Image (tube, rainbow, N blue to C red; front, side, top):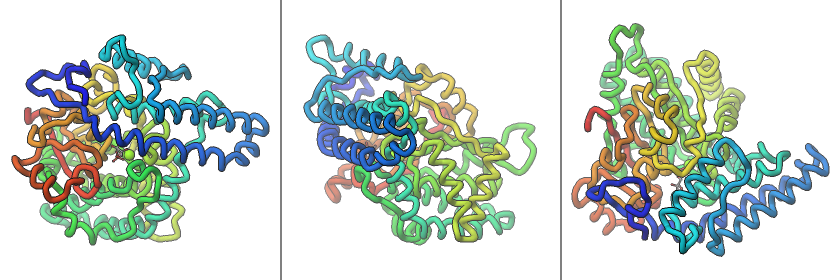
Length: 451
Ligand code: F6P
Ligand code: MG
């Protein structure tokens, strides 16, 4: 396990914690090659499509991409040194600087290699190298190697999506008549549906189906005891106290940003929450943040975002289709905006954002509330460190606080902060895999004001 000071990330000694390492080793050895093998297989299966679209050039690109990816898999499996990127894209220099920084920290004797580096870094690096293999073979540049898995997960969750759209229609129809308490109750339900939507990511299952089949609203009661930290009251008060001086209209908050995680059912739950925030007047505008290229198997790209809305519009189900039309209008009218920024597909911890991506940091500063979905965002919020479970969430954020923020995360990695004394130990004795099974979750809030 690497000690925190080796990371050079300036963690004060009193707050030092180890970079999560032992689980990392297992994951890289077992899960990442499986994902790479699936990517190679997907490209191979689509060979006819490349031929139809690009002729012989398409076939050559398919062969060369597969050869680069097979080489990558071999580098990974045999713990070869991490190589600099060569594709000269917008983020290439920044990635290479990050690698050089890792190498400097390690010293000259030993190259930074797959099994001897931080898990967070290596996992991110693998997805960036997959993209490099595609970008170096231009006819394949826009081919999303995870598209099949993402669309399949969406279609497998259809019943749950219809149930949720029908539920949303019922809430929206009466929203004006709801008392403060009833509004809070609905907010809580839809926040929790979006939270549990995060169970449905495909990277934890190495691309195997992981969709929502049962009714999400009906499951909420039985899931309640698995929420280890529930700061939803603070999220609610933040939204309600966000009305700015001189602001007219019914909205409480001017703007909520949602840092998206996975496509498929999870994205639908985020859109439903966003719809409710606007229709209830809790927010005037929603800004979504997605990934600029396919990432961690199921993460949302601009294409997934638009595709999901189009599919919802086209659904042969009245309320689902009506929800889709509403979402399309929100996008057209600028009530909903979608952004991507290269920072989200880099290995940096979020406490580096102000220095490494100041434009993104300023964008988030404009929000009254930032919701960050998912496990990977939590790892980046807390620096993927082996913190004591009782360390405060604010402390683990190490200065990251562009706006009041809330992590909505099901636990899939060996990190959890902000627990009560003894809570972590009790969980470990009852359920040794509590941090990695996706069975538990947190709604964890932090506000720059609360420091
Ligand atoms: O557990 C495997 C893993 O790839 C983690 O590295 C990552 O944190 C998680 O899955 C992705 O989960 P999410 O989609 O919730 O960020
Ligand atoms: Mg994800």
